[in-house]
Length: 151
Ligand SMILES: [Zn+2]
Ligand SMILES: [Zn+2]
Image 1: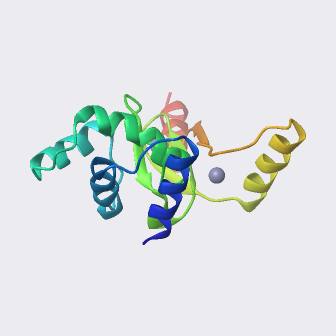
Image 2: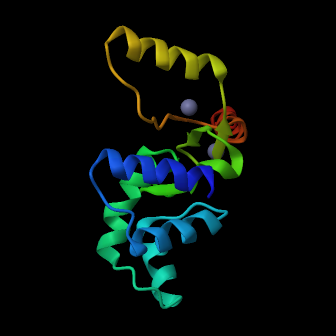
């Protein structure tokens, strides 16, 4: 049994939910994914493989996988929610360039610790977080500076 399956099972039992064959199959698929994905992509994948996992189950199971830390929120085109497996790169957060869409991944122990401390001071139990910073990347800043200086 993988630690991910352990975490998932524990969460399900906490919520009084069963570790059904459908959920197990879905977990197995997610654990094989190496890149970010959205709910529709995952649903298409299981459908193509001929697995008996309904689209509905995919939509209802993803938030559970997020809650137990098997997946984390990723970033994409901003139109939909993207997920990625936490264990591929470990937990990280994102910076998103609003000019070119470039995504920079970062980790900061300071931010992680601070988040925990803030939640604790509010008596809030942190389950997961999705930290995104929006701004302009280095190369876009240069382009923008060039564009204004030629006027
Ligand atoms: Zn973080
Ligand atoms: Zn950019």
